[in-house]
Image (cartoon, rainbow, N blue to C red):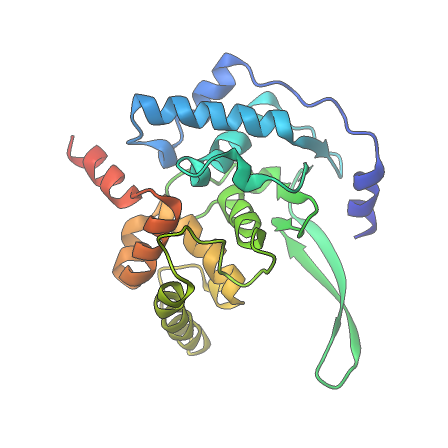
Amino acid sequence: MVGLLRTLFARPAPMPAPEREDWAAAFDLAVFHGLNADERARLRLLAEQLLAGKTFTPAGGAAPSGADVAAIAAQAALPILNLGASWYDGWREVVLYPAEFIHEMDEVDEAGVVHHMRHVRSGEAWAGGPLVLSLDDLGWSGRAEGYNVVIHEFAHKLDMANGAVDGLPALHGDMTAAEWAAAFTPAYADFRRRAEQDAEVEIDPYAAESPAEFFAVLSEYFFELPEVLVASYPAVYEQMRRFFRQNPLERFHDTAIS
């Protein structure tokens, strides 16, 4: 925690500007397959808007390259492709570590006892504050294999937009919290039960940690392995399709048969 706090008050190092080949490599990631020319153009514009509006701060000896910056911006732009850059308003900093980092915090149990906790993290998002990513984990993201630390942490930022971190983002006018809960609440209960029973699941068991983590992990699967999410929790997929205003299952399917 001390190391992370120091980065918040340090003078940011100049952000490496992505070159043309950096953008080309970023958009060649499997997670973007099936996007048409118009969608790719809009995604590039959103990614550039994100870079213009955020400060990237290296920490712990990280030395991000232009390729890293392009990969982060492009993947962060994907969830808001049909929403707009304003969905990431209200905070400014992305902190980059070279690999997993230690998060320290105090937790109070039901008996009122304070416990000092140390957790290894690949990323985290602070309400109103920075978003933190591991560059090592960035390298495993975007392969359409179900893991994406960028989408996971930016999904937390979307979740926080309505003032709570509870797995319920600010919904569009044609959606309701009741419909969202009708899909997510039983799905989360089922997933927790299966995780507690050590049942074999195709979705990362970390999704059972809390409703907020359930939403963030399922956001990874929505964009990376939509067929797994549809097979497991079709009602959740439908709510996420309406929220993100995208249908990755259709996009990947069209790519596969073209």
